Length: 338
Image (cartoon, rainbow, N blue to C red; front, side):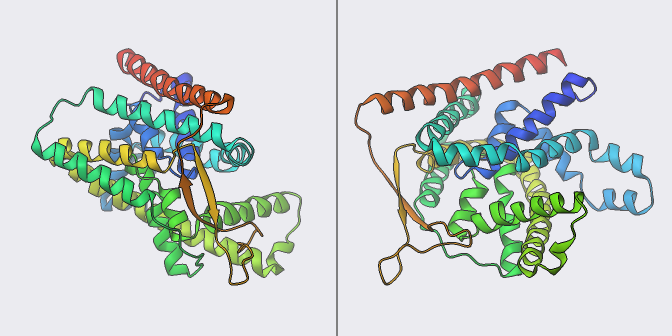
């Protein structure tokens, strides 16, 4: 169990939440991998599983302390605090870094996923024809998803609700990038950029006593989209956790081998050397999204030439691997201490 009694334990758990939140927003990177490598994945899944009918009965009956203890509230609360903070801070920094230092940031992510594969695989010993088959299926699914073409943006609220359910899959299923799936569904910018920025702007205005957003139909539309997306995310988070908890308990080896395969397959998404292909209209001009930015159609991956930039990128890949190994070392140290 994750220690949350000491101040250091609480701070580290918030930092892990920051890492999960930032990872969930980056296409191709899974917050579940952060949980897996940092050593609190199973506690996270089993804590979410506690959000059930019994928990709601405790809440409705006013037994708040019992509800809080039952769902492992301190652990989940600190973790989600870190995730929420990351959406308004670290994720914005990542947006900037990806825009200006794309190759090097993707190189770090690539290295982190390589390190994650090593971490998950090193203690997995139950290899047989079933787990090898699961590994192959996971790799094929990961590769298949990584080479799909993105759809058009769709703000239909039922579809937004579905996107919410899908988006949190990366938190519960390592290797499955919810943000990348949102790109494929066409709603990444709408749900993880525009709506979040609308909420941020609204908070900023309300704090200064400005309530003009009430008359701003576009702002209200964005906030409505964000509310529906959040509800879908909560439903997806609880649903996925129950399903994964059941699967992990009864088919742990097959599940882990599939996760390893999925993470290997996801390397295609975060391959650092790729050229962005943008959508063109009938006139040959670029199609723009709601932010007047070019809409991505696909990525064309290539093998780089050996030059100074490539050597720097390789160094950043190594840095990503080192980060994961450092997290592993910290996780082992924490488990021994507790």
